[in-house]
Length: 118
Image (tube, rainbow, N blue to C red; front, side, top):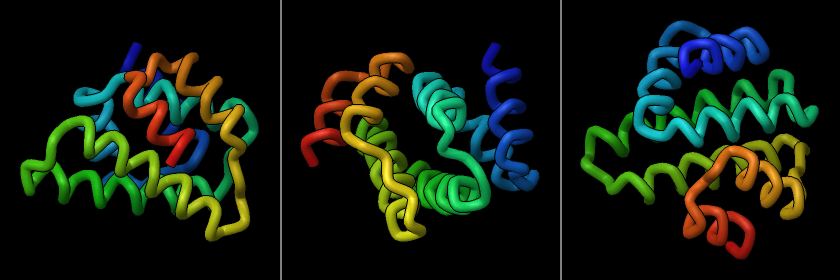
């Protein structure tokens, strides 16, 4: 199912091949992360702003992996950067939406709390 989810994300956002490789690795590390991203897309948050924000956040994630940053810190940073980049492009996601998407995707509680409460 993971391959299907990453392909669905790629098709929805028209991600390039380099980003897709990082997305697949992210899916291996954090299956809940790709579930969250797909749920975000299905909730109506889609288009080029999301593709740009996700691509940038995934490239930062790759660098953090190379630097040996902890798993939870990488996951939080990816989500935080994704939402910060979306907000800078005029796309906002409410805390209620984030909370429900985290529950749906089974994002670990500490990450969920950090995303909602800052």
